[in-house]
Image (cartoon, rainbow, N blue to C red):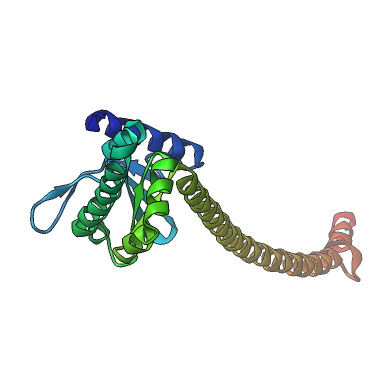
Amino acid sequence: GDSKMQGNWGELVLERVLEKSGLEKDREYFVQQNFTLDDGSRVLPDVVLHLPDNKKMIIDSKVSLTEYERYVNSEDEERQLHLKEHINTIKRHVEQLSAKNYQELYDIESPDFVLLFIPIEPAFAIAINEDNSLYNKAFERNIVIVTPSTLLATLRTIDTMWNNEKQQRNAIEIARQAGALYDKFEGLVKDLTGVGKKLDSAKTDYSAAMNKLVDGRGNLITSVEKLKKM
């Protein structure tokens, strides 16, 4: 029933889910970053997820489960009252989250919703079973309610998005390097063709020079030998 301990425990569960997601801390997600809004107020979202294309998503795990704990441990005549208050607690937290406008911390490319994390699956299940409009009403306020299982599925999807993004970046880099390699290869072929032509020209010049010196009629060596004999 201790709200502070519940909060710490909820954050621990959230951290474990994040660790299992395949995402890397301080690269794909950041914990408790400080932000200052235009009005000077400070906000401290529990987790900020970074998505491809510079998009971001916020996870909040501060919903109180005190009334749920009382509902679980109470006598029959009190259970329904605590259940009703448990649902009202979730609704109030949805309203508070919506009022914070977390999505305005970032540019227009960011998603316009926040993930509200409930660390106990049955706590959400019993609430949604009692009030099946709870999820949709939260969604209308740009709040998506998630539990460990649904959050993990969401995070795995984000991890897949990052892997696809990295593969796409690698493919673009491979194409760029392949293009540069082709340009180099094409230039090398041109240079070698030029060298070949120069070698052919040099061979022709060499043959003409040798003809004057040794092979041709009246060549220099024959003429010098005659001068020597004379």
